[in-house]
Length: 320
Image (cartoon, rainbow, N blue to C red; front, side, top):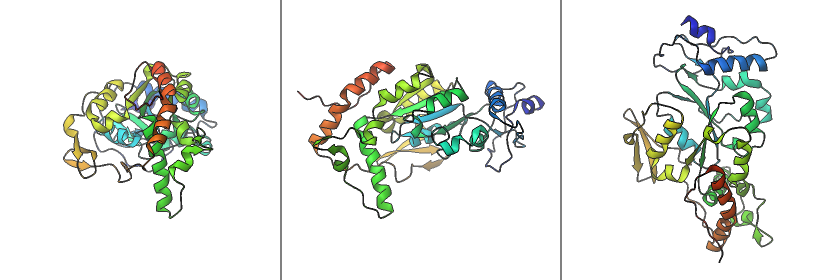
């Protein structure tokens, strides 16, 4: 325990929920803790951090894995499924540390304080879907940890655009505020409105190029969001292997909820589903407009496939 205390991250004391499982004994400081300690020294102006270690041996630490996106790609489902693994400690809320200037100015100590308590053998994970499409984020993550393991979940770009609109639409409805139809966003002067932010977020190859300036492809695992919805277990198995986790999640952890129309989770006899805001029906879109959207994404999708060296079963309409 003495060796662990010497190598633990220096933290400001703050009340948090701590894990109840006993810690696994470790006689050596983990490499991630060593990296964090050095990083804190470099980025601290006062170097006056206090130890924030719980009596059971857990502590808060910088994440070793980040789910970087994409928005409306299935990030919440991925995090919930990954959290079934006992060696995963996940931050509950989207932190927005690297993309929100007000948060980033608070420094790494603030970032650590947003993380859950975890044991040295656990992987701390946070997810903020906006990271993938934020130009400044890749460099900032790289400066914090060059060996970061990144998870990126993607789905059919056209479907993602519709989901993006649907989320904002329902947010306005809940506040009793009017919101334009999706056609008003997709069409401008009789043409597809390529300036619509939701369309830009689906140009995966542009954003991926930015990440590959800083991280090699083997540090970014792409989860097929469409397959995760239809058959989650095989996709989660791949994530386990990427993170070098022991195979703990199995097919019995998933069951299809006919009422909700998607897979829910079963963990130690407890069953839980994603929030009711997930899986909402998309708006009806004119077939010709949908084909125009799919046609627009045809070339960007090809560039993305070439960039990452794999293909995805995304709808593509090519005008004859």
